[in-house]
Length: 160
Image 1: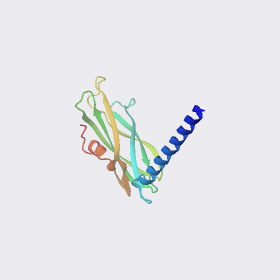
Image 2: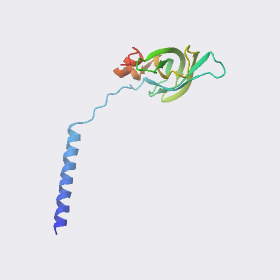
Image 3: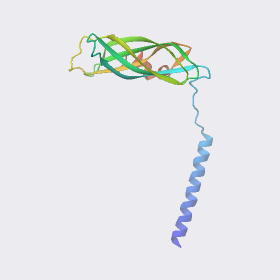
């Protein structure tokens, strides 16, 4: 008999808790900012890798993916990649390269690379890290420009 009373009490408490939770969600709806308009492109770049060119010791390259989250083709996309010396806490950009990616269809992604001159200090004692971002494009929005922390890193080279 005591188990039935305990079960019924817990059931009632659970129903009341769900009711309060549902009423809270209705009173405080989640508002999402619409970053992508119906007829615009929204671009982002993710670096895949960087490497020395084994066939030509004077060259290195950056591999990256470009993503278009919008419903319109993005045109004249320029991507900038930077190589950072991360050996110690004083991060320093040692190489910058800009490539013209071209156009990218709506709701798609594509892979590309930028080939550039080799860095001068390419010893195995140094630790390097690479990042790439959309520098410019026609008829599009650039995703990182909506995130203040990324603007500081990508465009102002502020690693603090």
